[in-house]
Amino acid sequence: MFCYQCEQTAQGSGCTNFGVCGKSPEVADLQDLLIHVAKGISMYAHRARALGASDEEIDSLVIESLFTTVTNVNFDVDRMEQMIRKAEKIREKARNLYLIAAKEKGITPDELNGPATFELAKDRSGLLTQGEKVNPESRAQRWGDVIGGLHDLILFGLKGSAAYADHAQILGKKSEEIYGGFHAFMDYLSKDSFTEEELLQKAIEFGNFNIKVMELLDEANTEAYGHPEPTKVRVTPVKGKAILVSGHDLRDLDLLLKQTEGKGISVYTHGEMLPCLAYPKLKKYSHLVGNYGSAWQNQRSEFDEFPGAILMTTNCIQKPKDSYKDRIFTTGLVAWPGVRHIGPDKDFSPLIEAALAQPGFAEDGPEHYITIGFARNTVLSVADKVIDLVKQGKIRHFFLIGGCDGAKPGRNYYTEFATSVPNDCLILTLACGKYRFNKLEFGDIEGIPRLLDMGQCNDAYSAIVVAKALADAFETDVNSLPLSLILSWYEQKAVCILLSLIALGIKNMRLGPTLPAFLKPKVISYLSENLGLKPITTPAEDLKAILG
Ligand code: FS2
Ligand code: SF4
Image (tube, rainbow, N blue to C red; front, top):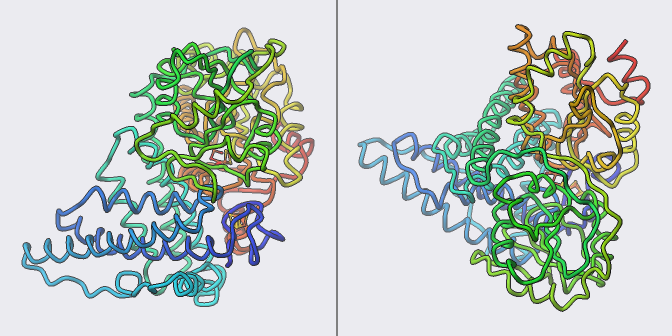
């Protein structure tokens, strides 16, 4: 195996024996092989679409194949093999789609090879050998590490973006343009040779594409559940039976809330599900009582102590402890060997039974609330007031502290940074990195809370909309606003967001806790020279550099 797609990669360069995340070499090799087959599918699907032929099963399968290989999603070798076998069938379907479309148009079809035609081994050990030959290390050996790394930058971005496209399609939002884009980029990555310039340009093109994917998901979420609104959320338990829902999927939470209505079970969000509590059509359920715990990397102790059942709707799952292995469930693309899985029928009965069999919370915890729900609609509704406060000098600067949390040391930077931000500055947060400081008191500036949480990682779209609106209001561009982006990354959704911000030309972003292993020094220098992208240093130094 060779995997370097996330921030906690071994020695900062690559997991080679076993994933730091818990991914086995077998799963890693099969994930690389699945991506290779998915490239083959896209080679046909991209050409078929150009001739006016498409197929939703083909489109969805490529999105799911990418998403299933995101960090902390699928650890189950059997499920990985099943997906590869299914992908092989879909590749044949895509091939036929293309050949028929070409015939109908009287066109000679392109002769495709590589991922489009290679034959999959019949047994698992053969698949593992094939997977090893298409991993990132093999690309670096073939093209050098700069080109291999740039290929992987786009591939990892596609994986993150696929997560968003999948959430959107689950809510019924499907877009020809988005499906076509995924195939076009996957087809591009199946080429035999690349240049650095062309890959860099493609990465920017992808960044722009990902903004459209995030916009589609924003539409899907807000049309299904309304616009998030400022909401006081309980972050301590209430007495009684309990279910904890983690991951990112709004529809799973909705379906579970319907199935638990009137059963005397309180439902809590965990990690990236926290922003769900601000959506009108989710917060209407009185048994959705609040949030429990913090970010994903603390789950092994938090789930251990949680006296109920747990549902993982997407990443980030970690190896379950024996103490809760029989009361944690996966659904969708998440999988851990031996953990019970709720299938596409979304019948949560086994989870509900497991919750009822647990003791639940014996007592109410001490009351503690935080306020969330400052996505684009809410922030823009007070834009005039915010603009006035900026003009009066009462708001000096905006800091967007966004991105993932993680287990490696060095992430205290973000807590220290947030607590060191002067009182005349606002802090916007996104994704799970905020858990390090979102329960602290930050006060307000003339009624505007100093800490405004915009939501999950995908709600970076909200931040982009707000930044553009502020720039318009001040008749300037985003880079001239008193706004600084302090980013933390962990997995591939952060990669697609970073590429979108780069595509928008956002300058002077600070990224930590370490820089991605797949961005080689030459690429880092390019980004630093052209956009001023820099690694975080210390909160004091960075704040001084920003505020002067
Ligand atoms: Fe946090 Fe994990 Fe949200 Fe990431 S819960 S690192 O997947 O996408 O953010
Ligand atoms: Fe290592 Fe991260 Fe890959 Fe897991 S996802 S194997 S931790 S680089």
